[in-house]
Amino acid sequence: MTQDGRIANLIAELLKELGEDTGREGLEKTPERVEKALRYFTSGYSQDVKGVLNGALFVEDYDEMVIVKDIDFSSMCEHHLLPFVGKCHVAYLPNRKIVGLSKIPRLVEMFSRRLQVQERLTTQIANTLNEALQPRGVAVVMEAIHLCMLMRGVEKQNSKAITSAMLGTFRRPETRAEFMELIKSSRGLQI
Image 1 (cartoon, rainbow, N blue to C red):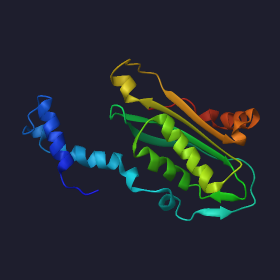
Image 2 (cartoon, helix red, strand yellow):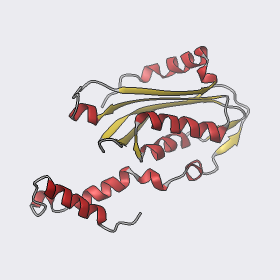
Image 3 (cartoon, rainbow, N blue to C red):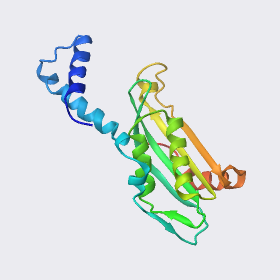
Image 4 (tube, helix red, strand yellow):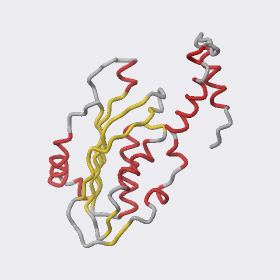
């Protein structure tokens, strides 16, 4: 995407429609700042899985659970264009293939930098790891605070949404329970 100023022009028009004076000191550069911010918030559209994983898949004779927890993320709700922020916990049970650990937060980042709903974000991460690794199972749990629930509508300040995607062996109660127990210490989102 190019920085052609079209978004900034639209933001200036939006501010005018809201009754603002875009020429006043505090708003003079706002349209350009908002364009830059929106391009960053949606930068995941210009990334793909192959580029993010970047060949970091390795054959390894390891068959126990691999967990990366407490991955901070922020995304934009596609319904109101307001942020939601939280933690993501990811696990997989390898089937002779592992991924570089830093690639898991990069996948979370790529998908969260798109207009999203938390449910889709959760399944995109799980399905992508499942396809790339072909493991025995994948689990993703996301917990987030949504500004659309805090600032408008129901205005519930202490509510958070928790979503999960359990694939393969993580659908078994005992495997799911082990994963949930291992990430339990990270519950209690602090923002």
